Amino acid sequence: MPLSPAKAATVAGVSRSAISKALAAGQLVGFKRNNGHWSITEKDLADWMEHTISRADSTPSAPEPHPKRNDLAELETLREELKAAVAAGQEARDGLASAEARLEVLDEVISNLKADRDAWQTQAKALAARPSGFFARIFGR
Image (cartoon, rainbow, N blue to C red; front, side, top):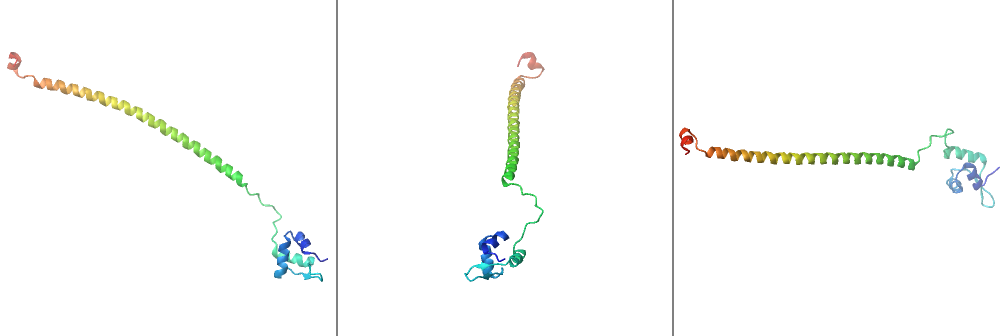
């Protein structure tokens, strides 16, 4: 029984325009009736479908992951990286505060050492200015 282009498209699972284009290009064999409409035999349609239309395998492949799920996984990974970076930043701030505290203590130690040095220098100058020798000590010269 001959099929119309619309019925052939339904059977083949393609659009009517795909059938019309195949008829116009000579890829699909059909004949025009007296009223100007196309008719396609089931055998010709089956031959065309076999050579032209690629069908899916009978075994369904694994579904591809949903793009939003990939985005959510990537977002979760980025959140974990951000948490790690924030923790590292906090650790660095804590280390900096510790180093600044040690620096203040060392500055205070240096100041105390300078004061001790100045006191020893003053004492050394006083001792150097005193007269030395036996007679200088006896007579105070």
